[in-house]
Amino acid sequence: MFDWLRRKRETPPVAEPVRLADVPLLPPETEEDSLPEMGGPFMIRPLEDGDESALPKIFRAAIHGQAALFYTAEQCEAWAASAADEAPFIARLREGVTIVAELDGRAGAFAQLLPADTIEMMYVAPGLGGYGIATLMCQYLEDEARIAGTTVLQTRASLAAKKFFETMGFKSIDTEEVARGDAQLVRHIMEKKLR
Image 1 (cartoon, helix red, strand yellow):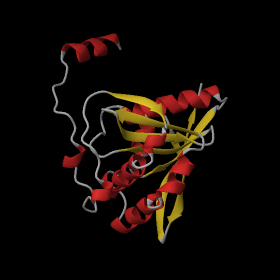
Image 2: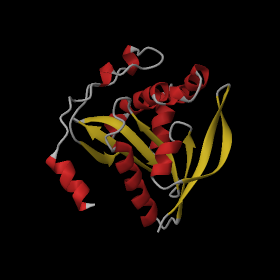
Image 3: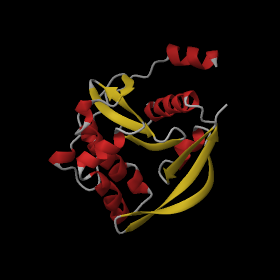
Image 4: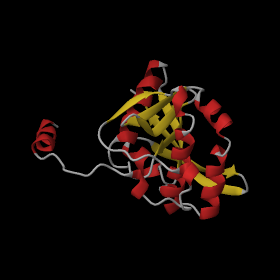
């Protein structure tokens, strides 16, 4: 492990800051769903009052971005529509433990533990995948679940998220279909034993 850390420190990657505006969204991005340009380090913090407009945009952008590779346009549109009315969407996020990954002072991802044994939501804005943001949020929520006395952590992972949760130690125990508007979406019921 320490050799890996040493190699990472010796050869730091040189990369341009991520520009969310350069990441195409499906359907074409509207002014209402435009995401801010971001780059640099991020931090995990609790949901704050100022997140009301950003989190629904991240939710919709993630669905039309990453999930569009696994679901039809109609399925994605029906799924994303659950954040069309932002007030109940944010009210739902205020339940349980909701955390936000902040980059350059702006939200770039979020995740929710609700109830204490279920990761209910985890969405990362397009263009921010591969930076370890989802991994850090998942680890944070696992710790919250342990503190609450949870021994088996669950999630209902989309086809787009299944591989990520497998890398985090979750195992698929079943699949289910869930209705979103007029569309049916397949997702995996996954579990991870916490030690």
